[in-house]
Structures are given as C-alpha cells and as structure tokens.
Length: 210
Length: 223
Image 1 (cartoon, rainbow over the protein chains, first blue to last red):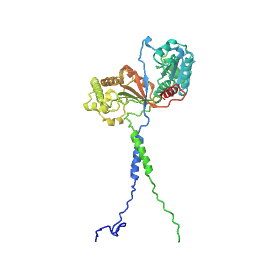
Image 2 (image 1 turned 90 degrees about the vertical axis):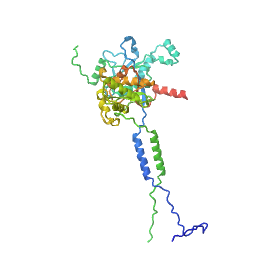
Image 3 (image 1 turned 30 degrees about the horizontal axis):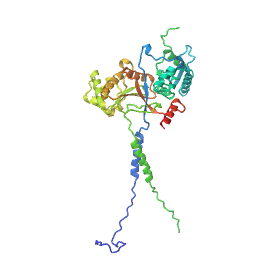
Image 4 (image 1 turned 30 degrees about the vertical axis):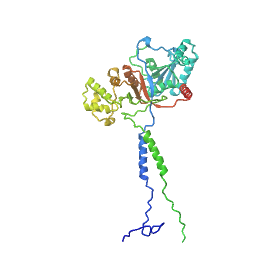
C-alpha cells in the first residue's frame, strides 16, 4: 500500500516513489478578459463627449428710446450686414440708397473679405486725432485703436436667419477684430428688398397704392 | 512509405501586447470620459473661435432647439436647495398646487420645457422618465406671456442668496431661427441682464486674420 517516503535516499534525484509534480502551464486563457475589455472600450467610446464646449461672450446694450442715449455711427464707417435664409448674406455700406444700388448680395465665405476691405478703407481715411490718442494713452491702451474707431458693423438678421448664421457673424467680428458692432432689427424696406431679391416678396394686401 | 511531416505550428498567438494596448485605451476612455448631462433634446451647437471654458455651476441655461422650443434649466449642483426655492416661489405666486413630492422632483429635473400650466403634469413624472416626454417648450412668443422672463427672474433672486456671480448661458441649435433667439435675449433684457455666454464648439482661427495675428503676438509675448 502507500509507502511513506522517507526521502533523501538520493541527493540529487528523488526516489522512485516520488511523483513528479505536474508542471501546470502558467498561461491563462485571456479571451474572456479581452472580450470584457473591448466591451468596456466600446461603451466608453460611445458615451464619451469628446468635444469640450466653449462659450462665446455676447454683450447687449440696454434698450433705449431716448435719442441722446443711442450710439451714433458715422455713415462713412458703417457696414450693414443682413442675414437671410439659406445662409444668404447681403450688405451695404453707409446708408441704404433710395434706389438700393449699394445693396449687394454675397455669401458667408466672402463676407470676411468685405469686412477687411471696409476696415482698411476706414483706417486709410482716418484723420489724426490727438485727443483720442491721449485718452488711449491714459488708459494704457493701444493708440492704434483710434484708427478704426469709426468702423461700425451693423448686424441685421432677418426672421429667416438661423441661430448658426447669427453666431457665425458674431464670430466673424471677433476674427476680424471689429470692436464696434451692433445687432439690430431689420427695417421694413430692407426686409422687402431681401424678399424681392429672393423672389418671396408678397405685397401686403392693404398697402396703399402709390 | 516515408511521409513528409509538416511541422505543426501552433495557432496560439501571444495576445499580451494586444491586451496591454486594449486596456491602455480603456483606461484612457475611463479617465477622459465625462458623461453627457441629461438633455431634453439633442442640440448641435455652432462653432466659434472662442476658447473660454464652459462654467459648470451657478448658471442659468436656456436651451433653444431646432424647432424653436425653449427649455429652461438651472445649474446648481452645489446647492440643490436653490432650485427648491425657485419652484416653491413659482408654486406660490402662480398657485399651481404642486405637492411636496413634485417640488422635490423639480430639483432633480434637468430642464423645464412646459408652460406653467403644464408644470404639474411634468413634475408628476419621475425625473428619470421625463426625457421620454416631448415638451412643447417654455412660452416666449410675446412679452405678455413670456414665461421665460419669470423663470429667469425667480432663478436670479434665488441665486442672489449665494453671493456668487451667475452666468447666463444660451445654448442654441444650428437650425434654430433668429426670432426665437431674440425673444430669449428680450427675456434676459427685461431682467436687466445684458451679458450672455453662448455655448459653442471650438473652431480654429483662420490664418492671416486680425485675431490670428493677435493671438500669435500674445504667444510671443509669453515666451
């Protein structure tokens, strides 16, 4: 029957009764672990939000009906941008002429060039103003800020303009370093003009005949 | 007959490096992930060059979806009692007859997109199930029934007790129309709030523009 192994008969070799310990493989089947790992990866990929949102500041003025509180803009330095539907953009410089000859159609891709062009024009026609530079120097600002102080962009989104258009044009102001811009409502004649250009104009039924 | 024995190659490959990489990616995603806060609707925000980070607390968030529906929410994880103050105030002034449980439910609710009249029905649904309900949006149409104005007013007065600055966030969808956006601005303006932050996605600054030059100059100045 079972023999008690006293051991140690041989110095380097175990006795004949000693069973050799079975060498177990150290390899583990990793397949289930990998399965689980990839399952988790897919889960996290789907739930993660990679794009970190940022915020854009928008400062609006207080509504005022008093004439003296309203900001005046020089006609020579004003650029009005009208946003319409289907990402259409219209602009005119200064005042809208009665015959609307300066009312120009453009696109979002080209509006930047117009802004830069207009800004250069304003800077070129700038008259040296020591007073303005003094104020900037006092406030430790850049005296070049005086150069384009007459440049004002008036943004007029029409009722069909999207929120994206509005944000894009505000962004364009930041990109081109436009310091003065305003977001105002469209005048009725401008809306009419836009609609006429797009062929969606319907004359109001009660309009008095001229 | 002598037969040529092809050496049998093991089909087992050593998967260790593969597993290493897999778990590396896994740990990256686990650390980098930030769960989306529950939203009543999916909003695709426009891009801007702005890089200001989004504030996470002490903010009033107005969401505008592509159909022009407006949702109001308060970000006050630090002290949820603020939201309770707001709903209690709304309940009292409008005599909506909300129960205690319904008011507590409001604290957990992520966004409100119903009129005051529909509030009781919305809050009777547990906060987790509200995402399934289609909300018609807070009425903003005209100044008389601009309920967003009242929400903002009550939220501002509740936040005032914390003496911390509040942020006013507007999150609009790409396809939202301008008139609704203007009505939201009007609701804020009537509360004498004129500084907003529009939530956008980050976009690169186009080369050669004023801003690109300015940022390059700032970079140089830092060095």
